[in-house]
Image (spheres, rainbow, N blue to C red):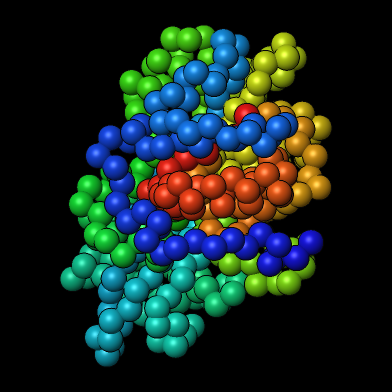
Length: 341
């Protein structure tokens, strides 16, 4: 399959720059993957489409304030680091701008000396391996000095940093938010539980590899970056029971979807586990666990629209996206949502 097969026309003004005042007021397109039929709803209507006994799987990762602005120790030249993933306690993989200043052995300082780092190696695709030096608790220093790593297509300033976190975010470690979850409020989750739907949590720390453009012509040649996941006993047991009883497993976001399918591919079932996944789901993939998906509207030619096409069918997905553009849905991180039933 070719990358260009997943292209579509997206007017720039449909890229949402700011979140809505009320998280669950966003629009919801409901796409029937069997018939291709489309309904237009609001996100708070999602309760209608979930049945008692179904299992709703959310990703409780929390976004790190992973953008650090500092300067070179010797020259004072400005530098920007974007933390991608923790390798060891104080060693990270990071993107650096401008990269030419970050040769191995270069040292940088942040926050008037609160934090120092040295480039100790080269990572994949131009990233750097860096080692931090500090006194105190790293997470507290990062909270104080770091900025929220909003995607490059969001040019507006985010007034409230918590709006780029889900209301259930808990385990810090992501370089980007699992954005399908941004639509949920605590009240909406309570309504869902009150209806008899099992709500469970996995953790997948989202890396920027998820959003990196596919640069190859043939999608089979694209290499996904790996991301760390955790799936505990309780969650595994609830998901397996739901499947056994013929109820649906509904994943919130492509991150939850990839985690479950990766575990099922590895173990033949859902099993308590943790580790790294680089699963790439595109049309032709046979889903083992996921029945329905709640997701946002994604970039043209991205691995995310390929995953959606694998579940809903390529033609139906592209038709739904064409409809979303025509109906002026809001796209990407702060945009509207789609439910594939």
